[in-house]
Image (tube, rainbow, N blue to C red; front, side):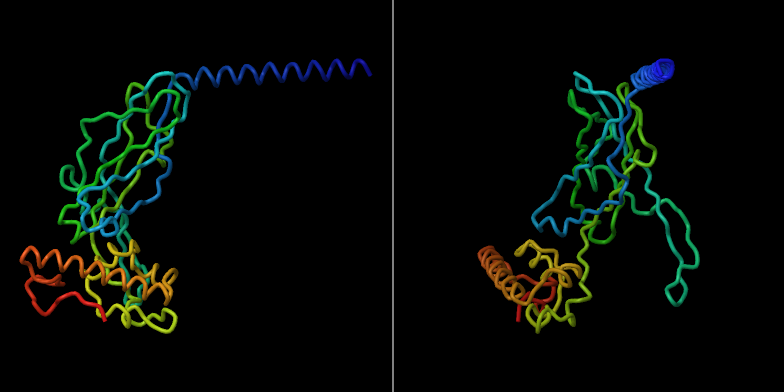
Length: 272
């Protein structure tokens, strides 16, 4: 019995030595370099439409994580703009995908136009931290009302960090300022009524007014999943109050009432 215990103990001791040795090797190897990467590589979308009509710039944050050790000092990291790539699809007359291609996307965001330039900047991971928030300031350029623009970001090597996990070295952001007419505006039943019955004819200026007045998106998802008949009337009252306020301000400035088309006097925004 004693012999078996000794053999077991000796075997366990040998295993512990091996594990300890491996752990020390791993720590020594880990200490050689720290890595930094984005928290995820999900596609991201930002629209100025939902930020409010008065907003000219806004900030989007991306979380960065450290694979490595804590440090008692601030450490420097860098993010660069990268080329944006994506798939395009060819469909047949029935809407089935028959071909695809992976291409460089045509509308790439431009520094100083769609976002504040950060190409000559470095950023800091605070001491005793294993992560940081990278902030990019987006600019509301008029071109965003015509097309979506793509901004791709990638981590770069510094004295403190190398790019980490390959799939999350890069993150993509689509930037837009386009208002899209909801397909459910006219005929989708909200209780015993529809958005059209309460709000009237659709217009992009009216759509933006509704967003600003109510804080809601007024897209198909909102209409289908969140909007109720009771709130439809409530939101209309908020929108009418906001429209009256805007028209009073415009009148004081010697301007015409709010229109869908400034050049068309028959396009005044109104609610049923």
